[in-house]
Image 1 (cartoon, rainbow, N blue to C red):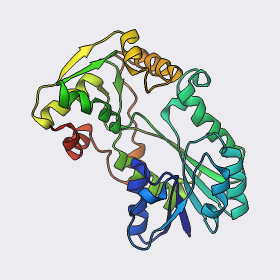
Image 2 (cartoon, rainbow, N blue to C red; image 1 turned 180 degrees about the vertical axis):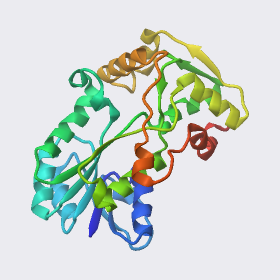
Image 3 (spheres, rainbow, N blue to C red; image 1 turned 90 degrees about the vertical axis):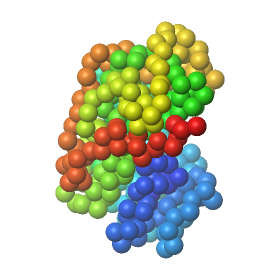
Length: 279
């Protein structure tokens, strides 16, 4: 059985490829920029740009299962070519945003819903992994922590249940390799609901440095991020954080169910990535 991992240069894909290869599976690492990949000997590297259907056929040739990033632009064509190639199972890296109220009004959710709906309508069996906030979102604070020792936030008391990227990779491994998980939809979270201020306090403890939290108005935050964040995405994030301000987020046991081990804590993530916050 050959497993295609799209987005192998991403944090989840990069963790998933060695898991599959180490367990003896025939894995094909795919990326829009394959020259950036350096997998273990024996792992095939191919071009697969989810924005370019011309790259699909060669990447899918001889593949049985796919780990798929949620890119809606050409999902219909990807599914068609996957079926033609003989793919029987697709594990989608979706998002917890798809289960939010009024998800169809949320541009982040809509992109993932479009892919989920295309897969649901396809005869290819699909499994949906819906992670809550990635713990790696904390990287966005690293520059400010190193240079100013302070982080500006519009909703410091907004809760999420941050999940370690290694747990998402472990969940994907289980979904791809254990038949009992096929066809399911799993809301993946870390083991605790934490505010952004809580997360920054953990980073301060792990790094041994003081990190201030500065509350900013949503308007100020939107303006500060406008150079790199599309306005609809900024609006969706602010709406979500406002709804979670002081409201604990859901914590599930899906990681435990899929992998057999508890989800890693944010403290574990902070220890694993402390160097990003050091001078």
